[in-house]
Image 1 (tube, rainbow, N blue to C red):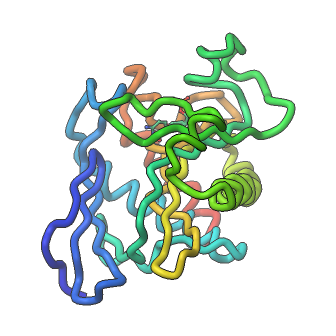
Image 2: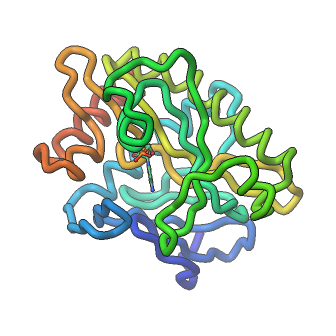
Image 3: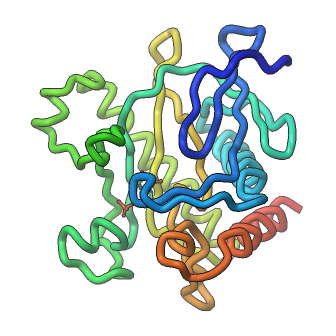
Length: 238
Ligand code: C5P
């Protein structure tokens, strides 16, 4: 598959056309950003790590009957994906209070939630990705009510599959951000990536953070902790 023209460049990835109009070429970048792009650094090796980790997790989801846009990994930092129309929602699933939930509701970081919750944020950098209420969702019409229900149900299913996978490698899935798209025939499909950039992952033995909070909060080397996640996930597959 040939890499065609650049269609879109985000903070962490570039999307290119291919000769097949239904397939895109994704290139993972080494840029790390936080706080809506206010903190930014180039971190050599980050793109390769996120490409590999996302590949393993999308493969695992597929084995558990959950489809995504992922087609195949084609190089260390590149993959082919199905073209979808991204729904501009950041779908956050939370199992344990942390980050913005802890701050917004005054729940201590690390407090287990009675049940997993899904929150929808408007994916719009200029607005700072605001949290959406049901009333906002109705006003914005980013997706139909049926599509929103499907997205919430799928997000919880994905969480149910990923939680035990991370448990097996001695890590707790605290929370994660998912994105979904629409295929040409109107199917809702998991898209984007699932990596330590988009999840909070805490080591069960040490409680250390093995995710992008290491970068956000200046806690050490981002690639060192992403390597830990990749090598443990790799071990799981052997
Ligand atoms: O910051 P907050 O607590 O709302 O983040 C919840 C989860 O969503 C975290 O795992 C974080 O890494 C992820 N997230 C993301 N991209 C954003 C916002 C949050 O991947 N723009």
